[in-house]
Length: 185
Image (tube, rainbow, N blue to C red; front, side, top):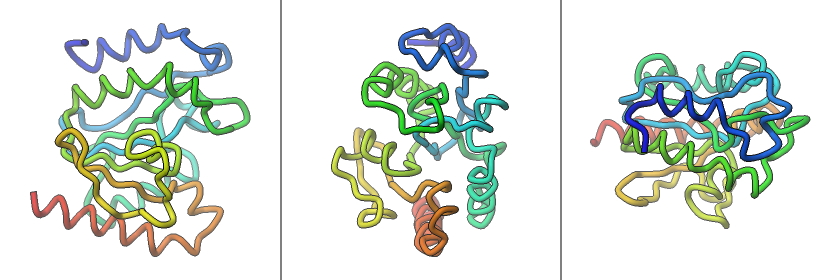
């Protein structure tokens, strides 16, 4: 267990548990308010994230920021954003199960330190890892599940929304549900 996020990040930067560390430009640890009630978790960094060392900074990050703004959330103020794996998989492929297994303890420790009330899983991989192995984003998006005292919801990954804009209204409804759930708390 780590005493704070800085200590955790320093140790994570030394990680060589899997081969992803060999090809990364930057570790993409996470960003946001370390006392946030809401934590967003994606699958892993893409090219822009690897170059800048920050999650969701490319086109999908711009879409995520716009959706967050609509429900009065902001990565610099009241949420925290991280990924299952902290290093970019080659050619933006999905992180392999063994890579997720080797990296998940970093995320678990981030969750412990932040102690969010709600975790929003961005995309299939995150939702299947954190909510249920058989989670279906198209069928279960926007549904809240309670696990270990934390509410969890899966929704569409912003990159998937860029590929299939028809799902944007559904994702926006999920963000409205999130806002409503936070107002209840």
